Structures are given as structure tokens and as C-alpha cells.
Length: 119
Image (cartoon, rainbow, N blue to C red; front, side):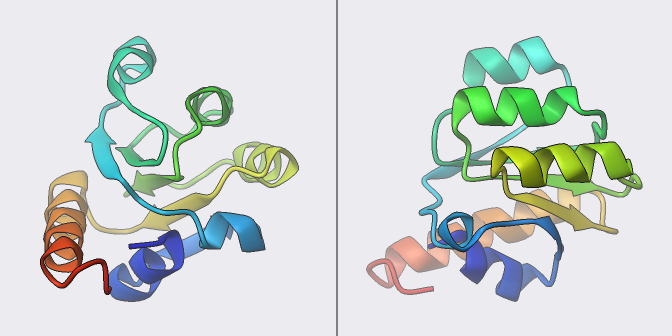
């Protein structure tokens, strides 16, 4: 599954995304709001689901090379969206809570793997 498939299936709002970012393969996911915990556990190619909205999220996402960051429920700061765009980090937003979003991501990734990678 690629990021654009996730956007289409979940109906999340794109806050920042490049063409290359839309084509990134999603290899897994991580849910976390404590940045040190995310740094220790998230992996390259993961979807990172969080409620954090400050610019440090983008720095961590870039450092870890996650496929995308999906912020749930909380309004994103314009500075955060701009930093994501400037650094080429895919930033998504959902009005739904992290529990709901994570369940839908897990289901989508599982279905994709069961069909041999077809979203």
C-alpha cells in the first residue's frame, strides 16, 4: 500500500505532500505522542499516528523517514504544515480519534497484504 491509497481509503485531509511522498510504500505503523518514545520505536516507511501538532513532529518524522504523519482530532498549526511542506514530509489530518484511525489503517494494510500488495 502506498500513501495515496491510504489517503483515498481513509478520506483524510492532505496538509502537505509531494508527488514522491504520495508514492511512498507504507511498511507498518506506530501510534505515539511522546516524541522520545516515537524516536525509539517508529521505523522508516511507517505511518505515524499522533495528536501532537507542533513543529517538532516534522523534525522527528524527517529524521525517522516515516512514510507520513497522520494527526488526529487536533487542529494543525500553520507553522507545522509549512515546515512539513518545506521538508517534504507528508502530513495528513483526520477529525477521527487515533483509535478509530489506527483500526482503519491496520485493516487496510492487512487487506493489502492478503491481496498481494493491491490496495
